[in-house]
Amino acid sequence: MSRYFIEIAYDGTNYHGWQIQKNANSVQAEINKAISTLLQSEIMITGAGRTDAGVHAKQMFAHFDFSGKIPQNFLFKLNCFLANDIVCKSIIKVNDDLHARFDATSRTYEYWIIQQKDPFLKNKAFFFHYHLDINEMNKAAKTLFNFEDFTSFSKSKTDTKTNNCKILVAQWQQIGNELIFTITANRFLRNMVRAIVGTLLDVGQGKLTTEEFKKIIASKDRSEAGKSVPAHGLYLSKVVYSKVKF
Amino acid sequence: MSRYFIEIAYDGTNYHGWQIQKNANSVQAEINKAISTLLQSEIMITGAGRTDAGVHAKQMFAHFDFSGKIPQNFLFKLNCFLANDIVCKSIIKVNDDLHARFDATSRTYEYWIIQQKDPFLKNKAFFFHYHLDINEMNKAAKTLFNFEDFTSFSKSKTDTKTNNCKILVAQWQQIGNELIFTITANRFLRNMVRAIVGTLLDVGQGKLTTEEFKKIIASKDRSEAGKSVPAHGLYLSKVVYSKVKF
Picture 1 (tube, rainbow over the protein chains, first blue to last red):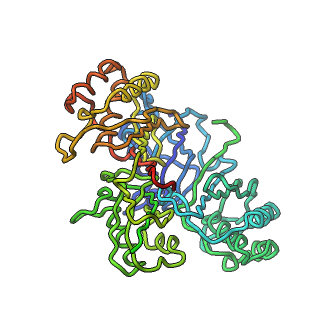
Picture 2 (tube, chains in turn purple, blue; picture 1 turned 30 degrees about the horizontal axis):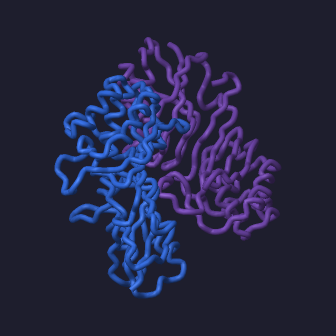
Picture 3 (cartoon, each protein chain N blue to C red; picture 1 turned 90 degrees about the vertical axis):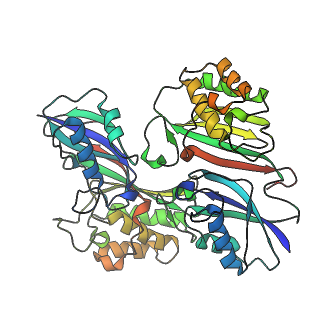
């Protein structure tokens, strides 16, 4: 039995998220089906994490085990089996114990905002036309580094043991017409990025000061934070493993 | 009565083309409906041209006549009425006799090809994985300047009086991951760009030489040319009026 990592990207618009589930299509189920057909063996992939319905991934990793021979032109054939909104970019043989989820040491998300309507970014960026002060949003974003417990930005009902995360990057950038928030952490709580972005938009509009933003985090109370922004602006953009470089 | 020009962009994926028609949705009908609601008057817009089902527009102009007062924040309000795949970018009062279609002196189209699958360009670029020789395609494209009659690249049944066009630009460029064909002419025949691109792809694959490409144009016979490429890679990207600068 050998373990393989695959690197994936997808447009999440037409899926009920990454994770396989009954009565709804998912990215994971689509890839399981395509790889199983191609390898003529029942394959179950394990992803680096889960993305919610409508969330996209520029880079996601998943692993699977297989005892046979990977056919020539595996990637080309697999991409023919997959719909045109999912692509498998690479396949790498790894050590048998490398785990796509548990061995990921950091994950990066991007949140895309457009302030002018753009038909070509429908379902790919959040259209938000109110004036935003990016400097203030970046000032508040920097304070995220001072905290570890992000209960204020988590779904109230989760099965995680702790709500602690180590934030490594948190920055807003204007890139062309897009205003992009990039955030890197060792782990993320469910809904965390969308809740942080929603609260930072309150800062950008002058509804909250940086001090108030910090108080919200310190309160460890989800009801204090701003509204979550919609899923369709969110991208999982990078997953890093310390044990291996892809 | 005053005449107004509007500048429009749209993702054509969900429309049966620009032109209003029975029993099918169209970009023109959507805009008529939105403007009529906003101005509380039955408005019929006239476009610079027609785009087929699935074809996009980065820039399209249309005109309409209205005797009332254009309300404040017209663009913002109109864009709220329009779906998120159509945007109206500007409105300009023009001379009463300026016609969006007849006074357009040149139109530019782009055709987008991706050679590697990209989930974020689903419905926005044609995925074509065979090797292409861009130099050969550009060499053949340059010969388009030597011809005026493009019957070989037109739909067999059309009501146009002549099949003559003056080609001003015809060029392939690799821009990032996209291979983009840009073509400018005073006018285009129905299906012309897609038939030219399909035939140039035969050149790029070595199936046709530049000499053979020229013979196809000279033959004035549509059956000689290559297959039309799919609509979803095509963008109307620029419309120019000599009488007025937008």
